[in-house]
Amino acid sequence: MYRFRQLWKFSTLQFHKGVGEHQNVSQNVVLRGVTLKGRYNDLPNMLFFPEACDPVENWIPFFSDPSNKILDYRNVHILSPRNFGTSDRHYSFDVEDLANDVVRYMYYNKITMATLAGHGFGAKVALAAGCYHPERTTGVFCIDYSPMDQRFHEAFTEFRGFIKKLSGINTKEMTKSQIESFLKENIECVKWRSIFSDNLVKLPSGQWDWKFALKFLNDNISFNKADSLAFWPVKAGLYTGRAHFAFPEFSRWVHLGTNTLPMLKVCPQVRGFGHDVHSVQGDNNTLNHWIYEFKDQSFVFASRFTKFLSMYDGVHLLLKDRTEVGKEFVPSIIYSKKDPNHVYSDYSPAHYYHNWRFNNVYKNLDNQNK
Image (cartoon, rainbow, N blue to C red; front, side):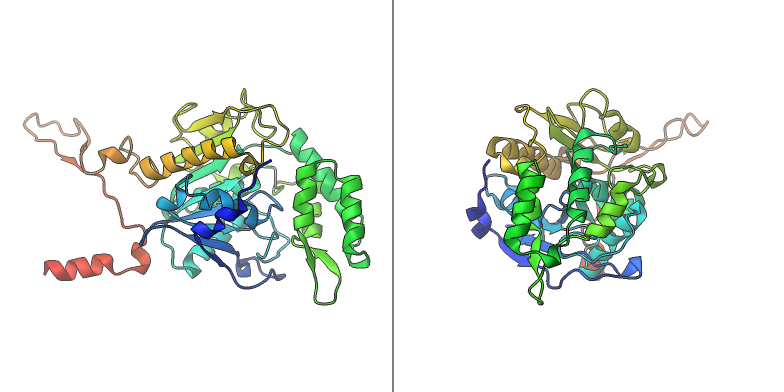
């Protein structure tokens, strides 16, 4: 496994203030995490959501690595979904509530439109926000995720078993060494063991607790409910914008033979395998879900990221890619009139400034033209 923590120094980091609080009303949930400022001024924003329980810190080296060049194109907000990390707690995991959390964060942080991306469960959050709020979404990028029912996948049943074991202990009555020993004896997967260890937090009382809402999480995944973390509900509808899916070749979460079909079903603009759907070659490693742990694999995923951000994200759907912006013209509705002498016009699809809602760029432009 490979981590490159030293690369943090290449980016401007800003951890969000506050800790996760229990909210009685879903609309009060606040998402928190860390913001990585891009290398240029006035860059668009990308909101990225990690896998369930995965700390945002684990993704900082991936995005801040200068060879990945992601910060050349976007400011990156790595955010914990509700009930994880420093984000607020609420019992609901309903897909619409998850989506509304995202646009609420965008409004509070004065972000008009953004690229939405995620890994595993975080990709579900990103895609859900795109489905419910397409006008706020320039594109969706999903890592090792497919919008389908994954409740009976081996990888998820393994995770469900680990959460059940954690629910059987009271960390507030244990020392950290006792908790670490429990994890070593009961969590067979070394990566999940590491993640759970990273989620230990010392309370002001001196007791230990988890950085995620264990009870809410266990209740959610213990029953086959429609709002299960591993289930994509039909009510979420379609995402009609640009989307990209990338996953390891031997993924335990996305089975290459069949699990790519839901991607095309939920995202009708996806043009198929090899264009918007990619499997990244690699070893048949049970830990390949955690792409940032392997240098070669993470570089390939980062290349897919930068290709999407630079060529497709935010580009009008009637154009092939960004190279046609301002150059290619789209004809108006052909043969819509019976008059054979009618001259049919064409037009250039409009593209808006990424933060027009919270900026006076168009107002100032109008004043200059007067």
